[in-house]
Image: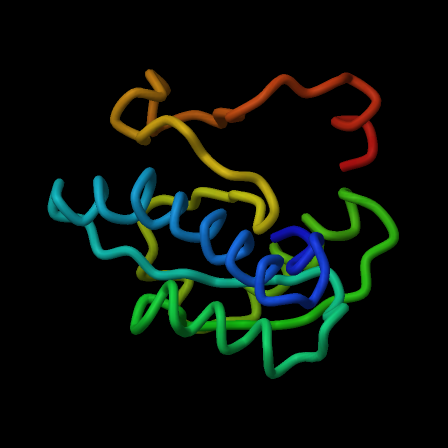
Length: 138
């Protein structure tokens, strides 16, 4: 989830978006797949500042066959964006086949592999500091 192409519509901005999404692949998807998990990507993108086709092209190019859902939403804040992502997931029949959910942003580059996150897969874990006010919005 998050705002795609936050950096604009230029070739450099698209490269930056691909770099950020590639960090999801290298830091989350590939380590999970190496451990025997099947990784599926569900995108709930907040807006389409450069149009739907350019961002869909980037998502398909970076995530490939892992991309199983791609929806653009209009959210006014992070709580609405998370809600839209959850609605996207729960609207699908194949949600029952999922063993683990990992929410990441489309506009934040990950720098650590999930192997190094030191979190318990049986509990809620957050990859960054969250203020109480933000939690209250959920």
